[in-house]
Image (cartoon, rainbow, N blue to C red):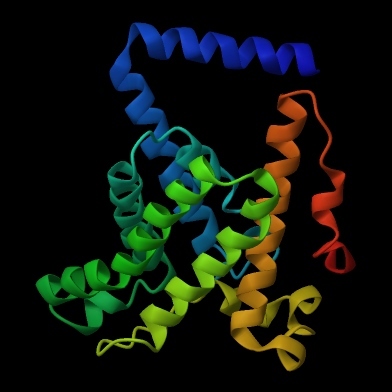
Length: 214
């Protein structure tokens, strides 16, 4: 299985070397996939289990970015698509131009997060990523919801667990920001497991922060 996976990765890399635009297309595609998957945690689908792993494509996209500015642009794409699907009524409630303006404002913290995450991922060891990335996400979430004039508190990732019994039990213990932090820990732990296994190592220890909920 590992040999097949390595062969697929090598093939994709050869294609990307031959067609540079393909790398951009795959990176954007991974970002869009993460945004759409994350939005399925909200009605009408309300698949509360999906956000536990929905950000994996985003982490793979981030790993392919070579500069924080590229990560910021991906953050804008992710934020606008995610918010437009998680709260589709926004543009019908306001005018179309105002709706796009609000989506752009709501996406700015996601852009800041990915820019900072790009720096963390490239300059700090893997053991730091597990905790730094979730904390950065929650900090960006707090900024979006509480920390500025345009308090945009809709579509927090932690709100997706309201309809899922496995996550509902967390709210009395840690609140919505704590649920968001737990979801991010799960996503980063899974990503670390996958990428460490890809390099031939082992990182099962990273699952301990969220193992009680799996």
